[in-house]
Amino acid sequence: MNTILLKNCQLISAGPEVGLSNILITDNVVSNICSSTKRLQAQKEYDVRGALVTPGLIDMHVHLRWPDKSSINKDLKENIKSGTEAASRGGFTTIACMPNTNPPICTAELIDSVREAALEHKFCRVIPIPAITKQMKGKTLADFNMYHHKDIFGITDDGRGINCDKIMTEAFKKALENHLTIMQHCEVSHLSNGGAIHKGEVAEQLEIAGIPADAEYEMIKRDLEICRKHPAQYHVMHISCKESVDLIRSAKAEGLPVSAEVTPHHLVLCDEDLLSANFLPNFKMNPPLRTKQDRDALVEALDSGVIDMIATDHAPHTIFDKQKDIHGAAFGVVGLETAFPLLYTHLVLTNKISLKTLVSRMSIDAARVFHLPWGDIEEGHSADLSVFELKRVQEVDPESFVSKGKNTPFAGMKLWGWPSLTILKGNVVWEKKW
Ligand code: DOR
Image 1 (cartoon, rainbow, N blue to C red):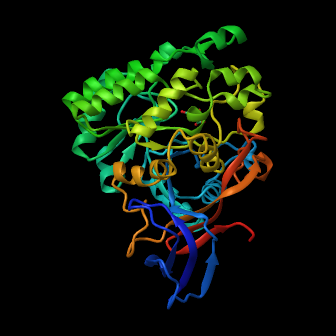
Image 2 (image 1 turned 90 degrees about the vertical axis):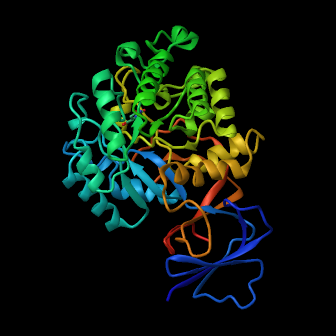
Image 3 (image 1 turned 180 degrees about the horizontal axis):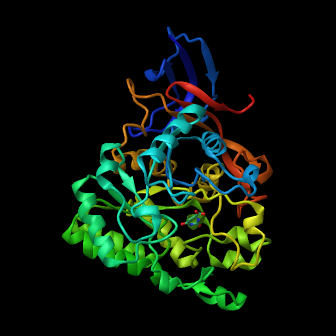
């Protein structure tokens, strides 16, 4: 029997907030939560001295870049070990990985090998989200029946939207039959038309081709029409503009089975930040950073619950893929190792959302939407816990990331609330040097 005792925890979970608690972990589960440590003994003890203890964070949108058949710059590319270790360092105990790999994840063999590789490294749980269409080509559906038998619950062609109406209608029908959630990267490709940043005044000023907001919300509109006829569970990934928020709000009011996620960078940055960026490619992602008004609408929707959860869209790229002119540079930024301190500093310390809401949108709510048996701290449940030192202030140093991707727009930013301990199924998978 293995036991760990966390003493003096500021616990935030689904239940009411209480004073400092002590949490006893026995083997894989939380065995006792109480206000006194009398009669509690464990092989290993951590006095966290009032630090925040949350359910292990859940991120439903991560690029682990594995498998990767290409042999160029292999040492610089993310893999399952570096990506899952980065997750554990950021306080995440469960992540979902995207299929836009080489080859794309859409076969039973690849699903098995992602699962096996993640188990080998033990840093966090990895949920494979395989492709909607074969080889992610958008032309024919992958084998949804096989997915169902492999206990897959979410599917996506993330990186691109499904533009063909007929394929999308088929996808909704088959997803409904096989209990799969369609996780859509919403982008009408002929509207984004090779753009690199948000289409608006900033793009005009910088003379960069833009991606208009309707490239996102027109696809959501089309998908909601299909969802009305074939109500499979539908999840909008990395939502970025106010029109999309309005569509999700009305769809929920109508009773459609929809949910949405937003990334940390869309909640904190906007296109005006590009004007002072020292390395523009690290501010390039898809969907792009939109206007201040869009960003504020996203924060409000996150607070009210119209947007269900935060997902990082952790998208590591090598310097070779980024160090190009803005049109040639790869889309995407890393997020796992900065997500919590970034949002704690910019949303909680500025009183835009409460700490409880932040924790909920990064754990409990993803578990609720995707019916995951994790995401809370309760006696008898899996001991997935993360500890954050809310008073610890530190600058973002990309060179200290364990992720191979250093492509962050937040380098040098001073943030509060850094992780210090991550526990997965009762095992310490990462701890700061105490
Ligand atoms: O910015 C992005 N990067 N957006 C995506 O949808 C894909 C991702 C990637 O794979 O790098």
